[in-house]
Length: 72
Image (cartoon, rainbow, N blue to C red; front, top):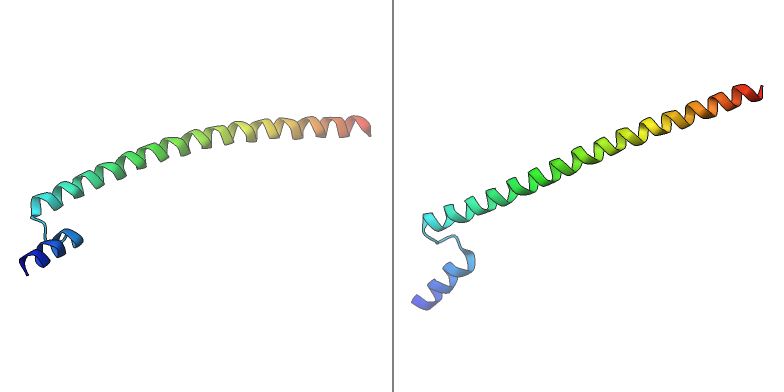
């Protein structure tokens, strides 16, 4: 019976002493913060690249407008 209780505790992980749970929570929180930072930086980089491409597209459209006006 004692062996069943131990395997139950190991299986669910909810019967662990509080410090172990807190330690795992801290590790998880740290991992999530690292991921948040990584993806925030990636999004900022992609937004900057998108802004550059939008500017380039506007220049292309301006060039097309000029050509169309010259053709009239």
